[in-house]
Every structure is written in C-alpha cells, then in structure tokens.
Image (cartoon, rainbow, N blue to C red; front, top):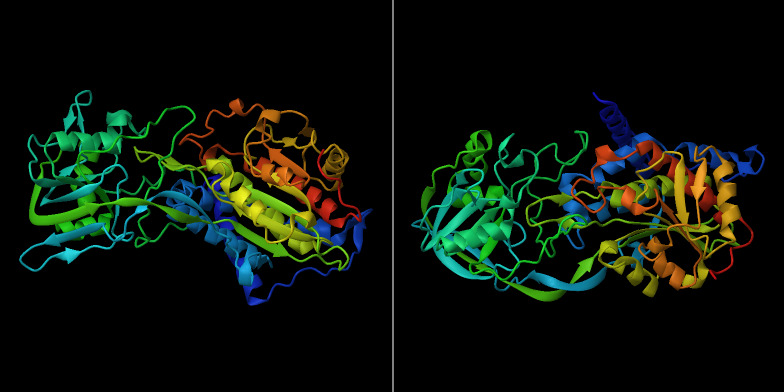
Length: 541
C-alpha cells in the first residue's frame, strides 16, 4: 500500500467513525469552559486545532475529485452528489442548515438547455412489443444533436475513422440504421496515444462521420472512465451502477486548449447507459469493444434486428444549482448574532466533448477539503461568534453561486464580521500561503500574522499585497462588494506556475496534502481570532 493509500484508508475510516458517533449522539463536543494550555489560547481551541489532519484532508479530496463526481459541473449529477456529501459532513460536525426549515442546500437557478421531458424518447419495437427507456435514468439527449429517428440498431464500435491510426469501424453505408457506438476511443496501450485521449474521441466528430455514412440516428453508450484516471488511491466509494445518467448542460473547456461549441448536427443522438444499452441490444456493448482495446482492431458490426425509435430534444429552462450553507451558533449571547463566514467553491468545469473529466482536485476540491476540516474543528473550539460555512456552486461560471448567496443571504450581510475564502490551496511551497484582501482590509494584516503564530500551523511565509489580478475571480468578491471584510487564501503567485490549472490533469496525486492541511490550520486560527475578538474589523476601504 502506498503512503497515499495508507493515508486514505485511515482517513476514510476515521471520517466514518466520527460521523457515526456524532449523529448517534455518542461523541460530545468539548466543554465550552475557557481554560487554557498556553497564554491566550483556550484548551478546547488547541485540542480542536490538532484535529485538522492530512489523513482526513486526503479522504475528502479523494471523494470530491474522483471520476464519479464527473467534474462537478453546474449543474450536474456529480455536483449534486458533492453537495449532498458536504451537507452530511457539516451536519455530522454539529451544524444546522442555514436555509428555510434547516435546509443545508440553498439552490439558485440559471437558464440552460435542458432535456425536454415531453419530447425526448427512446424505445424499441419487436415481436414481443418492445421496451420503453426512462429519460435521466437510461438515456439523455445530446445537445446540438436534436431530432427524431427510427431504424434498426447496429452496434459498430467507437464510431471512429482515423487513417493515422489505421482504425475504421464505421461501415460504408448505414442508410436507415441507428448506429450504436461506445464513447471515447480504444484504450490501447500504444495506439491513440495510450492513456491520453485524442481528438478521435470527440463526440461531435463521430456523429458527423456517422451522418456522412447515412445513419438515421446515433446512440452513444457512455463508458465509465478507466479505474486509474483520476489520480485517486483506490478504496473510496464509487457512484452506484444505477445512478441517474446526467445530461451535459455544458461542455468543459480548458485553459490550454480551445474547445469550440459544435454546430447543430445533421442527425439526432442520445447518450445511454451501458446497462440500458445491453438491454436494448441483447448484448454487452463494453464487452463488444474489449478486443479493440486490446488489439486496436475494429470489431465487425453487430446487426441486432431490433427497431429503435428515438427523439432528442432540449429547451431553455431555469435549472437548479446547489449552494450548501450551514450555521454553528456562537457561545457568547452578546456576539452570537454576528457571523464569521467560511467559504470555498464546490464546482468545477465538468466533462469535455472527448469525455475527459475536469477533476478539479486543486480547483477546488482542495479548498472544500480544507473548509470541512476547519468547520469541524471550529465547532469543537466553541467560538463566541457564530459560524456560517458555505460551499458555492457555479463559481467557474462567473461567481454565480456566491452572488446569488449574497443577494439573498440567510443572515443579514450587516451581521457578517468577515469572510474567509479558500480556492486552490494544494500546490506550491508547503510553508507558504498567499492571502489576498489585505490591500482592501489593511487592518487584517496584523490579525493574519497573529493567527500564523497562535498555534503551530507550520506556515512560515504569508505573501500579501500581491496578485490583485485574482482578487475579483473567486467567491469572496461578492462579499467584498457588499461591504464585508474578506481574506482570500490561495496557493502561489502567479497562477501560471500551475501548469495543470483548468485542465483534465488537475488530479489528486499532484497535490501537496500537507500544504492543504497547513493552510487549513492557518485559516482555523484566523477564523477563531475573528470569532473571539470583542471588536469586529472595519469595513473594506
């Protein structure tokens, strides 16, 4: 077992045990008595500080940045699963939901192309009467590939014609047929650049080629990613086989590679689960392409003799996106109606047209992992002021989640003492943290240095008054605009030092878990000082 795997197994076991004890009421929070072990630091605070642990950070990272979260696009099934997990962790730590009736999820909406439930259809017709398939469970439409088709289902392989690789599994004439293909490309160790996913896997390139072969329509079997694609040690829970099939409202684009929006396709297409495809075809489509994986040789088309009727349709609708927000009540009646806000964005960019996942390990599973550790530790420290902990959606789309939150906050903005934001805290020098917001809130510089020395966070250098080009680019900014003092904790400057930023290469194995833990400890001390001080900091200049 590698060091990472050892950390992961230990951390996941601890998370499960602590969560279970908290929910069962067996594990009590430490006494609120303010006895101290060293000058100015209550014993409960020192004890809570020590609970911030790299095993637990890695466990959270490995879940949030796993392939099963599918890049946490806003919206997506993966983002919803991630939000549910964060809500469960905060509840286990003793928090209550900040929403109406104690809800942890405070949704907001944005208008996006969405499956048209009244128009989308997938069914087979045969001598036995056929079968109907369920939207959002068995199949979803493919955006930009809309319309209606009917014909015999023919399983052909991947739908790739690549002369350079000497691979062609598209029959010369598919007139009147519904082509069934598997997403991606052959997973051959040498062909198609091995583990790298090439342009041959582009979904819309495939659909266009099948249209040229006169196919009436296309069914795309969404293949699960390889087991080792996300850089996560094995052992964490995967999504169940019967998890709903998420529609791709948007496609990921990358900082290093232009991914143009495809034009409207000439034939309709649906994505379908492997299980539903096996029922429809009468055979396993993933087993059908296994030989192509091993030998990079096209399979022979499989004529099924089954008639398929499909309709792919979308319409613009307001779709729900989760923000997660939770409150831990302060221990001092005179200060408990004031809040220290802790935040990190939960989303990332999703999946691209080749099927590559934007795992978002650094951006921003690192910040959310730190957030959960800090939130749980602060609850044990019994702060005087209350805590408002937030995990935002749609940061990548223009801070939509945090803007919606500030527009309709669960507590008045005037009662927010400060907001601490963590976004990308997993790369760079282990003992160094960049903090933006001092230029706007110079009075917080002394407090930040005090926090660094309060308890042994092992951060020796805090870079301040730099990186102003990033100040408006993360979820603290709407709070700043509303007059709340903010600090933005970030890994290193300039951002160009991170070559994997906004690429599919942002995986857990490239992160420094120790640095995330150190940053979390610094944030803990900063938050505790803000929550404990008799005075609140002045508004930003």
